[in-house]
Image 1 (cartoon, rainbow, N blue to C red):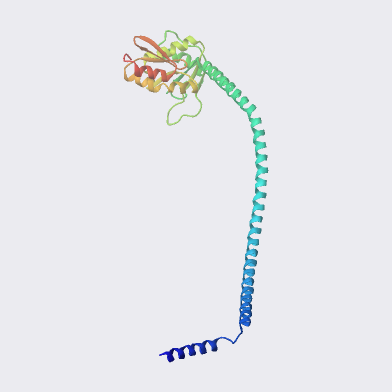
Image 2: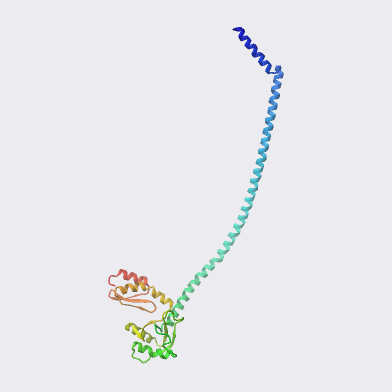
Length: 279
């Protein structure tokens, strides 16, 4: 048994001896040092190459970032300059607008005043006018003043032979759908206008040559629009069987709670009718 172990040890020694060179202790250390130095140099070279590549890549990236930053800085500077210029212009415009606003406000007030005056002048210029609706075209012949001065008293059965008229003409435009244009008459005396309109309302239906006529005051478009705003209120009064009248220019008059009520605003009239039980 001992001889076998000795033999194995001898074989192992022979095997190790055959795989390693026969170096002395000093030579072995020197060889190890050379190997370590070579590996160190290769590692150092690899690290240097890696760092060089990394540095080169970082330089490219950094240069790109710096370039982009410079572009952004230039754009920001341009925007700042334009913003400052814009603020200056806006400030100048605001300075110019302030007096213009005051002028505009004054012009609005002046326009409103002038509009009211023009509307009132138009109303006054039409106060002595009447309109005859649905009268056949050309029935007046070649002398309309003479015809209508005697036509009005006969139509309304007035106790006078004639009514003095200053002007007589048809409304603008052309007859459409067989409907004749209205006849507009400028009555010489204001009291005659009141008489004509009052008698026309009292008779109700006016007939002439199988035509039903209607006589109405000649009101301006502005007054007509104001009166039209009273239509819902007038419809309520008609449904309740309440008599009313529309005075010039647009004043609604009717009896409520036993006394005469006068309204210039259709909203006030509607509120009164809706809230009152005696209307």
